[in-house]
Length: 210
Image 1 (tube, rainbow, N blue to C red):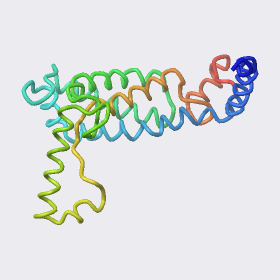
Image 2: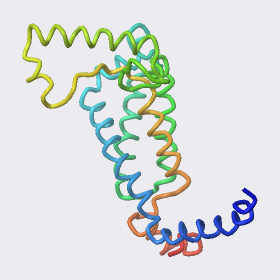
Image 3: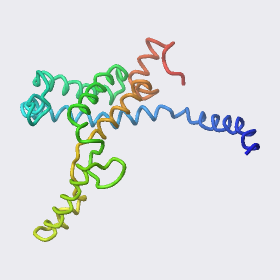
Image 4: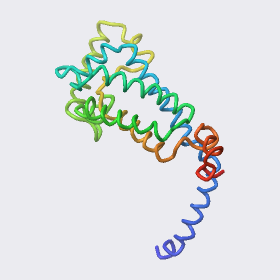
């Protein structure tokens, strides 16, 4: 143990130098985050506009919806930010500023729509995030499978994917929040973002170093 402790500083330096050699491709991390999130927000925003009235009713109804104030205004603003955010993330333009309203949207969505359902997006009957709700959902899912196997063409129904129950927990909203938070600090990244080239031209002292 004493030998390991004595060699620990050298091991740490070697590890640091090894990791530093990968800095030449550090632009991949923000690029992949942006490319992952852009279609997520594009689909969310365009879907809200396509079903504007129904979405606004769900936003505003306190009995079976979210019970939020000014639902039509909120749907318009949320959908607009999601679509604009998707485009900005895709091209790496104003990456850090656009993450802020998207982060707020994710927090509000997590608290208002998903928190009551726990963590899991897809119901599971076991594991540290399983709850009475998800365990009960799995019991009902197994019963539904039994019915379909007896009375329906279960093989055809499940040949393109297994049947699951949507729990609609905060898992996805929290994941997108973390990814957006990372982009807020990382920015759009080098080489493959509009932000990088604008900074090189107009703010060279602030542009990321090659």
